[in-house]
Figure 1 (tube, rainbow, N blue to C red):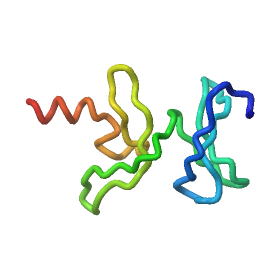
Figure 2: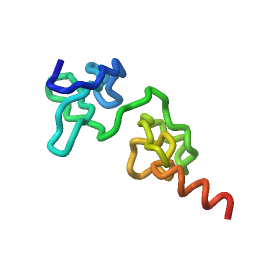
Figure 3: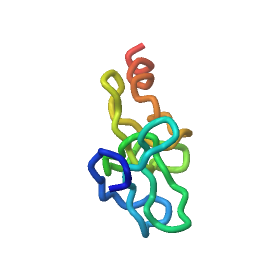
Length: 95
């Protein structure tokens, strides 16, 4: 293992496609980084393998979804996607 007690994901890297996003030790806790040489892709949360389909001006988002927390459901890994904070979308739709 890579020095982390988290189970491997086996999810393909969305950027290079050659590696997988596997758990590693980050400076502030576990991260999920690509195993391919030269690829710097990493996610702060565990990827679910699902693809975000939130509508945008140029079509559906298409980024990987990551696990949420106790109070926030699974969310998009793309910081520019409105589905990055799905709990806020739900509040805005109900208001």
